[in-house]
Image (cartoon, rainbow, N blue to C red; front, side, top):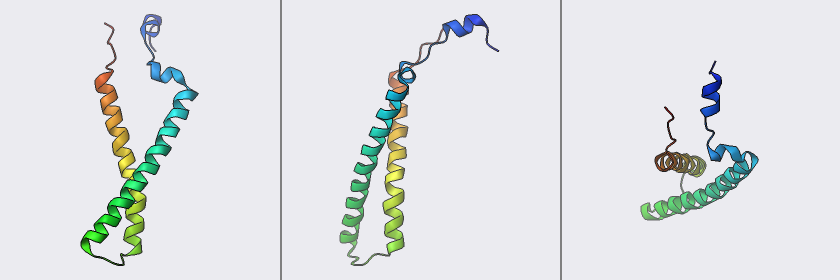
Length: 95
């Protein structure tokens, strides 16, 4: 168990102090990013089909790409967001 001195000097990041507001903003950003990623993957997949000349793609492959693609992009975007946030806002270490 931490000593009372450690508990008093521990700082909670300002982002975590927002509570419900942070959750609402995060859900709104996720929704917007998911819609944008879906459009981007759909456009990229259709362009790839036109480039390769396939007139009738396998529906299982199309469905897999259109479902997994936006989720992978969303994961990548939040990973990059987390890395940049940690790089820009490094916590101060109390000694």
